[in-house]
Length: 111
Length: 113
Image 1 (cartoon, helix red, strand yellow):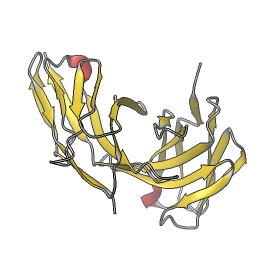
Image 2 (cartoon, one colour):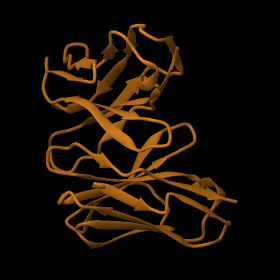
Image 3 (cartoon, helix red, strand yellow):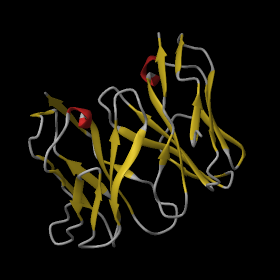
Image 4 (cartoon, rainbow over the protein chains, first blue to last red):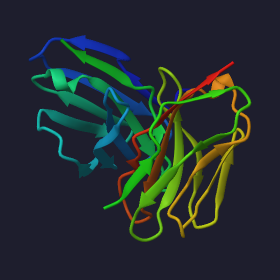
């Protein structure tokens, strides 16, 4: 059984396009996250949602908009994609004890 | 603010060698400490954790001890295998509310037969 799933696994698109990445967790966790991992493997938190409410919004361009239709889903929509957006994006969820459960990642390539 | 510093890689070892990956942290209060592992092409998985001083986390032959006096959480394994080749991330979070998990920059380990 998949705990945290993301789609698509790979996404190749051109500059200026708008794209979405979907995330679902079946663990019953209240908190979900989006992380960005750059080419040097550095991981940075982008957003955190708790029970569909935005808790953390790091300094991310407003072209990035998370949407949480329910507690089990946190989707990431990106407008006007730029070359620098190329990265691997990880969704995660966690119970109150702080352990993060990560999805398999979405490799976004902007050409 | 909270931060994590871990040794830069890459680290290349022969099979059965001893592994140490250093990790030190800066945090207010008493954070929880974690090691995550990322195998090639996969997401991060929790390897081990420790939530208070002198706790030792262990899993799959890996160990790390929460040392408050040296603000460290070094990862060790007595005998590495080729299958341990991965990127290892040290991380911490404060135990107050919805604070973010702060990661180190990751250390790539390659184990050769």
